[in-house]
Image (cartoon, rainbow, N blue to C red; front, side, top):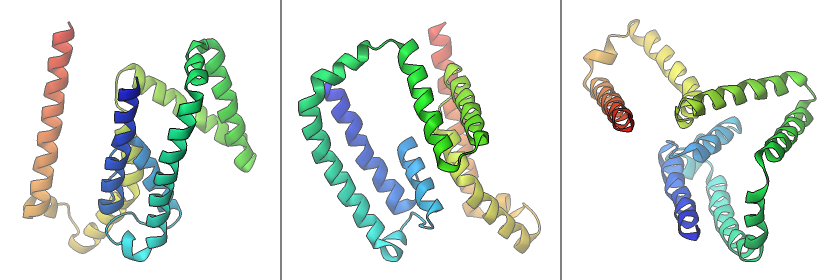
Amino acid sequence: MVTAEAANNATVRGALITALTLGIPGDTVTAVLIGALTIQGVQPGPLMFTNAPEVVYAIYASVIIASVMMFAFMLGATNVLVRLLDVPKPVLLPSLFVIASVGIYSLNGRMFEVWIMCGFGLLGYTLEHYRYPLAPVILGFLLGPPLEANLRQMLGQYESLMPLVTRPIPLVLLAGAAVFVFVSLRSRRRTRSAQR
C-alpha cells in the first residue's frame, strides 16, 4: 500500500511540469489547477514564468511544504486512517454529500448552485458507471473557451474552416488526433472482447 501511494504522489510532480511549462494538464488535479489559475487571470504556459513568477514560486513552495507535512502526518496518523476504511458506504457517502452541499451553499447562499452540483454529480456517476474517463470532461470544460476564441479569430481572418485541412500544421495535428482516437477505440474494443 505504501509503494502504490508513493507512486501515486510521484505522478503529481510530473503532471505539474507539463501544466506549468506548456499549459497542458497531465491529470485531473492539474486540470483543476489550470482552471483556478485561469479564473485568477494567470495563463499557465511558458510566459507564466516571466509574467507571474511569484505564482510559480508559490506553487513550488506549496508542493515542498505539502510533501514534508504529508510525510510527518502519515507517520503519526496511519493507524487512524486505516480504520476509516471500515466506515460503511451508507454512512460515508451521505456525510460527504452534506459537507459538499453546505460548502457550495455557503459560497453565495444560492440553492441553484447546489442543484448544479447534484446534476454534475449524477453526470459523473453515469460516466463512471459506463467506464468513461472523467479527465476529458474537465479538459473539455477548461479548453473550450480558448478553442472557441481562437476559432472565432480564425473565422474572422479566413471566413471559412478550410485552413484547418489545407495548411500543413493543422492537418498534421488533426491527423494525429484521428490516429489517437482510432487507436484508443481499437484498444477499448480489444479489452471488451477479451473480457467477454
